[in-house]
View 1 (cartoon, one colour):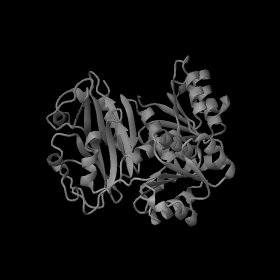
View 2: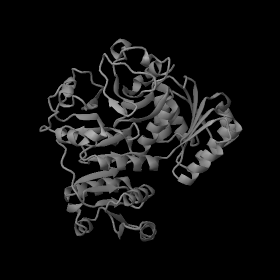
View 3: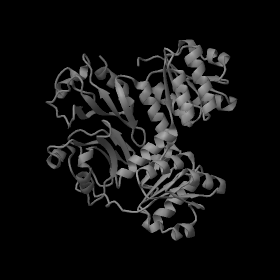
View 4: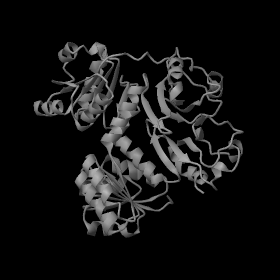
Length: 452
């Protein structure tokens, strides 16, 4: 998408972060916030035009100059408000691109059907679905703190904290080809303290680094052994909280024949969950109850996942479960600032629906041939999957001659059924699906190479 005007409705954490990112990228951003005090605060902190008012009404949308924006993002906390705003943008004002944040799958389905007969692109972003997808991906990769899937699930990008005993500790990134001479495996990003690095070949992996690897699914076992990840423990998965995310995760795990036990404090919600789950044991109680966890043999649980709506309780429950012997602990803490502190807090992984929502919205906005994408922990590096098209600079010659900017790395290619890690002399050809790591503040530069 070309640089232009973007209208965001909702000045909560998602709206604020999105406006900050897009303004930094050079977009002209207007943000509508209903609360007068919050609107004044946003005027002082954001490089964006702030309009105070109700974004579900046509006068306020007109005041925000909706007729001249290329894209509207409805990002309030309420599905109903976002749907009304999205409907007005798509059906009344003819906004070319509309992104709506929704949590109810029925709302999502209804909005997308309503847009089918309109000359607009209507997209729904569901934070609950994004959270379940990320947790399910984490459960597939022992020891990982973050996992994303690309190339139709054929390639994983997984982050691991590198222990001293790891074979990767002290290894130069360029020497990974000695370990994976014929397989597409590459270090694509490194977090060292507060520093994020998209590594060149000379970078050395250090013990304590959080390193993201692009891994062909068939090579996952070999990578895990070299990372020094603990062996996967066989056992039940315990889900704390029959929240919408918790219930959706339990249903997905149940369908894949995983052994699952669920804890829910509210008796009515627990009974409802039990009626919807055929092979999941639902227990009335709290995940912070040590006696209950010990009674349910928490030390034999492979993974404890805390997904209640009380995020402070999730942290306590996750720490307690880990101390009592659970193999892994994954917690829902919807504060993006805490996600990058996962190692310091003693958690194996932290899920932030808001951060996942922001990442998905950014990828819908990016354009430039992007098929999918995700932000890594800390939101400083993005992984994007693009399709190489005729006339784009990416296919104009060998990668070493194209001279991608520093902080941009071609990670892998999918060419038909083949996965390839390209080297400098290699070329991208039209039709390749290309996986690229890019520092977030340089993501717009990538469009110069991916657009025809």
